[in-house]
Image (tube, rainbow, N blue to C red; front, side, top):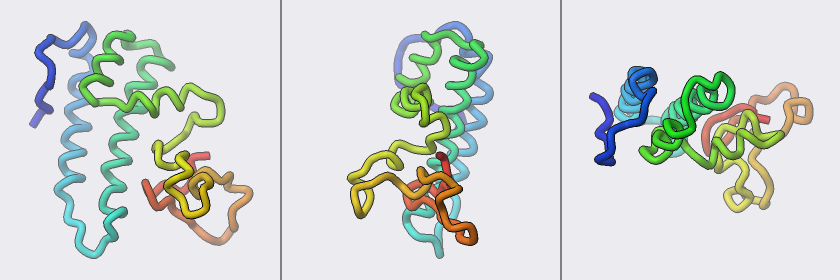
Length: 143
C-alpha cells in the first residue's frame, strides 16, 4: 500500500521516476514494522526500521549529489514528506561522516561516558576477535 501524501501540492517533476522505488521501500518498512519481535531486546526490534530508513535516505542522496539524476526541488519535496532525513544528508556531505549510519551514533549524550558510539571507532582500533554492534542501530562500523 503506497504512503499517503501529507501535502495537497502535486509532486514535482521527476517524481514518476523514483515513485516505484519509494513504494518498494515503503513495503519493506511495513514488513519490518510487522515483523515479530519476541525474544529480541527493544532496541533490536528497531534495527531493521533504522536500516531501511538509512537505505531510503542514501538512495535519494546518491540520486541528487552523486548521479545528479533528480533536482533539488524533488529532494526537498522528499525531505518535506519524510521520505529522507535532512540531518543525515547534511552530515553525509561533511568529510569523515560519509558512511554515518544514524544521528544517534554521533550524539554524546546518548552514551554512558559522553563519547561517540562504538561503531564510530575505526576497525583497526577495535579488538580483532570481537564483533561489537551499535546499541542504537545495530551497525558494526560506519567509520
